[in-house]
Every structure is written in C-alpha cells, then in structure tokens.
Length: 305
Image (cartoon, rainbow, N blue to C red; front, side):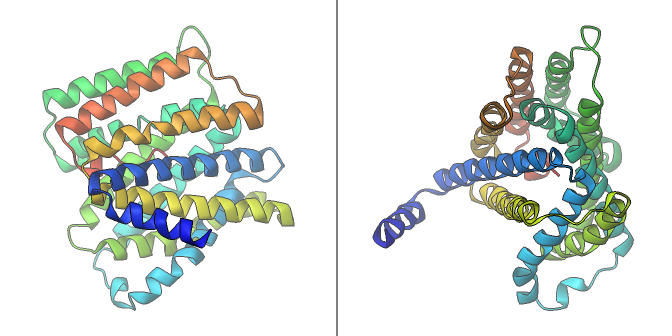
C-alpha cells in the first residue's frame, strides 16, 4: 500500500502543470460537493444552518492555523482593516444565505444556480472597479441569465425562497470579490486569508447564537468533515488556478453538478429536473465563454462562499 501511494504521488508530481491543474480542480469539485451534501444532511437533523456555518468557520480556522503561524505576525499589518471587516461581513452573509438555500432546495439545483457566481462577479467588477464591459462579457452575462431563468422558470412555477437565497448569496459573494481585489493591491494573500478567518468566525457566531444548540457527537463528526472538505476544496481551487489557465481547469469545475446530482439522488432521493440540467449547461457555457475571453482567476471564483 505504501509503495502504491509513493507511485501515485510520483506520477502526479511528474505530470504537466495543465494536468495537475485539472486534477486539482476535479478534487476541489468533489470535496465541495461532499461538504454541501453534509450541510444538507445536518440541516435535516435539526441543527440550524447558521450554527453549521459557524462551526465551518471555527474548525476551518483551526485547520488553517498551522499555515498562519508559520507566517508570524507580519500578515497582521494592514492599513485597510475596515475593508477586511466589510469583506468578512459580506462573506458571512453570503455563506449563511447559501447554506440556507442548501437546507431548502435539492443539491443539484443549488449548485447549478451557484454557477452564476462568476457572472455576478463580472458585473460587480464593472460597477465598482470601473472595468470595461466588453461585448464578450455582455454575451456571457446574457447567456447566464437565460440559464438561470431555465432553472427558475418564473411564470411557470413559483420562484422558491431557497433559490432566492442562492442568488442573494451570489450577489454578496460578487461584492466580496470586488473588495478582495481592492485589498490585494496592497495586502498579501496571506493577510487577506488571515483576517478573513479571524473575523468571520466571531461574525458567524453572532448569528448562530440565536439558534444555538449543542451538537451531538455524531453532528460534530459531520461538522468536522464539512470543515476538512471545505478547506481541501479551497486550497485545491487556489492551486489549480496557480498551475494552469482558467480556460483549461474551469471545465472540471462543472463536475460539481454531476456530484451534486449523484449525492442528491443516492443519499436524499432527489431526482434532478431536466430543466436544472439544461440550465446548468447553459450557465456553464456562459462562464466558460467569459473566462475564455478574459481568463483571470478573480472572475472565476467558486460557487460556494
């Protein structure tokens, strides 16, 4: 077994950067899908999603503490503390809205709507950062809107609260990405990540207090799994974009919809609607088209805050 592991790591280490990037993105998609499934499961056991979000932040901070400690106190130096606070508030609200949507809607529908997050980020960059809205971006945005409408089908069915929560989460996440872009002009990525972890944990706790109940041992096990999978997904996502261009690795991110459909079907008995699948393909096409014309990681982003 040990020799097999060594061979696998050696094979991965000798692979081209493009292949590594795709592999990391596949791992990120699988990890976040597992975390989303665990969030939905826990929400059905009586644990409120606001408390789930708090433990996701707290346990994630503990898992990342070793990386932060290696950097010493230097990352704490910043002249934009209030921007860090604003970014953390936006992130927490986005996570709460997304988790609430997960508790109400089928996994595949939530993940499919979450694919619109990069398009919201594009709009945010144009409005707040005065980035140029090219024809390609307008086309991508229009295609993405069509995809979202195919999933929601307003006029044919009532747009649910869960779906609105996911779209609200995407909007908040888009504004948070704009703030992050401003912060990274002067602060290092370690500083941004450190303040995010330090500030978001107490902010999430403030919301969790209103619905607090002590989790059982089994629930704590699931909470730890969510934190581990979420952290792995974020690290893999970041490294994937570092290894290869967005246009190469982005198609692998679409496997989140496949994972969500499988987890929803086998664990929750959810049969994805055909319109959800069609809408997801249309939205993904829009995101891929947008990234192909402007392959920058800042406009990609994960669908889960």
